Length: 269
Image 1 (cartoon, one colour):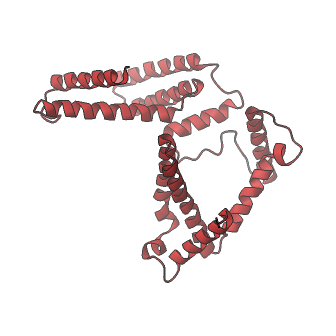
Image 2: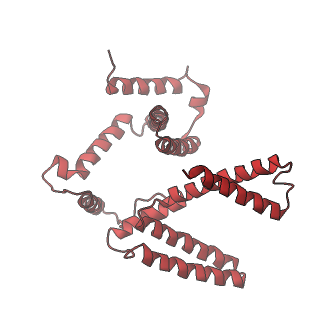
Image 3: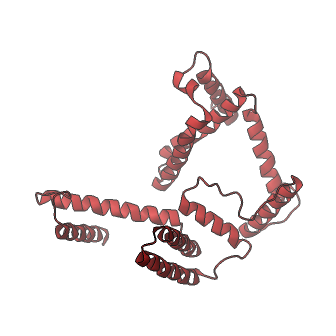
């Protein structure tokens, strides 16, 4: 008979308690919230990679690894007598029901856009009830990758119509920031170059967002393209009896162009 998710989840909690117990695993027992932080981030990115590859088995495994991090942190909290996994689950269920009054109560929201507006209004009322200030752009973690964080902040600001009218207008801002960066480079002002380059990158994210392109994915694509072409250049040089460390600059450039051409030829039908 197939075990229910609830039964399996209880087994998972018991397994983690055993691993952290007196007769458990030395490595698991040694972990702290601080030591687990890199694993939480790493597992989240491995889930994203599994989604991109489209392999069901890989995604299933990586989701399990990510869930393990949640269970691990909940176990640490229970040992510190702060809260239990049941509190985490209860809080999540309550929040889902509270934030979806159009599903669980008598509110109305018939489009995804209306749901987002309602969600923001609910979060604002919750903050006011708790007596804490809340900005429209709150809720974007500083630990996010910079491009993703920029896109999330811009999207939140756009919800209150603080936005460019379209991608073309946003691109004009990119060109303005690039001119200012060129001026800073000409002046040799390192601090200003750093600031202006930041403005260029932030403005480019606006162009991507308004073009309905994920900036992080776009940069990852460019990185992968560079990696493939560099590997092709290395292979080309090795086939000609040299290497990237030995070849002169002009030969590197010719080999780079060869790698680009071969990649294009491979993709073309």
